[in-house]
Image (cartoon, rainbow, N blue to C red; front, side):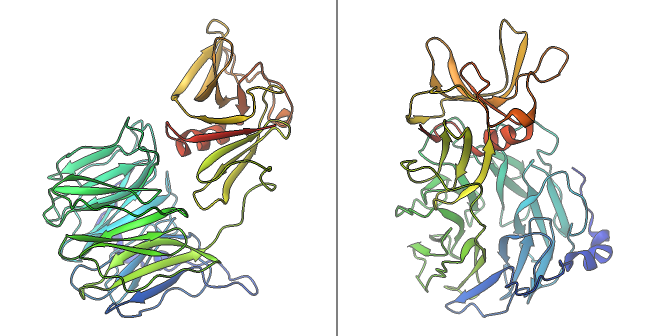
Amino acid sequence: MKLLRPLLAAALAAAALAVAAPPAGAGPSVDVRAFGPAPALGAPDVPLNGRIVDVAAHPTRNGYWLLGRDGGVFSYGVPFHGSTGGMRLNSPVNAMAPTPTGNGYWFSADDGGVFSFGDARFFGSMGGLPLNSPVVGMAARPQGDGYWLVARDGGVFSFGNARFHGSLAGVWTGTHVVGIAASRTGNGYVLLGANGAMFSFGDAPRLTAAPMPQGAADITLTRSGNGAWVVGTDGAVYAYGDAPFRGGANDAGRVGAGIAASASAGGYWVALVPRPPAAGPPLPPGSGEGRRIVYSNSMQRVWLVEADGVPSHSFLVSGKRGVPAPGTYRVFSKSTMSSAKGGTLRLPYMTRFAWGKSLAIGFHGIPLRGDGTPIQSDSELGQFRSAGCVRMNQQDVKTLFFWAPVGTTVVVTP
């Protein structure tokens, strides 16, 4: 992924404010709510080209930036340093980290790419390198001389003077990771799980988390570094350590996108975005609770269900009638490429969750012959075609593969 230099800032300023034509009756694309001494500064009031995925606070001024999925940046009480709004990206962005001066910032992208603006120095990235799981967030050292990226599976990647203090890669904790926050010394970090659990490394504060049945969205540490605020996907705010609770932003029609601590101690902003509609037809009865994969054998359909119980994706598939038996399973292994029939068929992006008589059963792309041609067409998905596993469209299976770390619950219904 290309590094974007500060000299592009002026050219990109217009792109940062690019917005879609507002449809009739559309509500605002993002709502930023202020708590405690954090001042209310506003948010864009029209639909945007990319949904807001993060809010980042200036380290010394009472203001913030909003980051869109397309890399568009919206500044409130703080200077604009550039964006990727209106540009074609290899992968969408997911998080922003400001420099200690507030005169620059970094973005992280799902593929591990890093973009730098203003006085933010580029120290490297994972762009173009293979990942077991997509990157979901980043945190910078308070000194501005390095940063960390964190992947959904809890893997941590260190750059510059940001030292590696440990990770959750290969460790099943009962959840996946959604964010990271750096300790105030720059010698540690906290990883936030989707269930609200916090995992501390280095000298980051050890904080006991409360269960968050609706799921966690983002974390920010207090200015002292001895506490944290966590915002849930429902907009509720949880305070730990020396973080004072100033209120939450629960809104049935919106979900939490980010939280940032204000320069005025004890205050914070919460960014809310419209709740996306559920994907696919209604979930089948008895399909479990929490974040999970649901596979309906009779419907030959799969849903990826988020922690708040809303399906974010739904796909037609091709499995075998009655296989595996209805019940609750867990993903136990994954591989980007597997094989069958003595190696004559390739099975892309295998995610194994059950056992047949002698072989594992998993989700994988439609099998490919030696010449790369698929053994069935996408138009046949939704029909029973498999000998045991669950076949998927080649792009859909990648989505499932990266969405579901080892340990993810899989519910099979009749």
